[in-house]
Length: 102
Image (tube, rainbow, N blue to C red; front, side, top):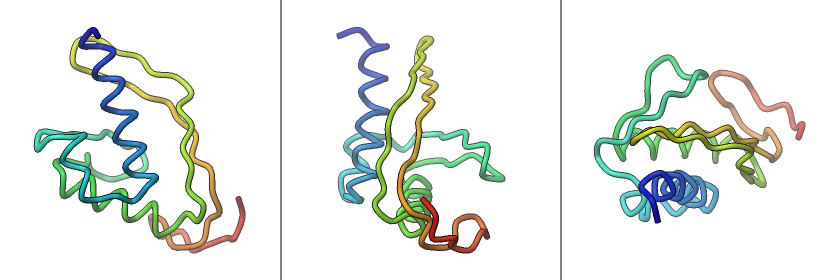
């Protein structure tokens, strides 16, 4: 498997762990140098603890969470992933109170 394919698989693995809520497995799919550039957040998410905090926020706010990867692009060690999140908005996310909508 090429490094690009391995990197894509790592991102897919992270999303699987996030959807499952298996926080103990986060360190098996990302390392301490993990960085997530999420345009919804004021700052980049860094490291395993930051990833866990981000995942918990989304899992606490979205009931029936599912993620579908729409596209992935790689260049060197970088992976850009466009994905769709499915679920019901059941809790506060980034200051937005629950709407109950899908």
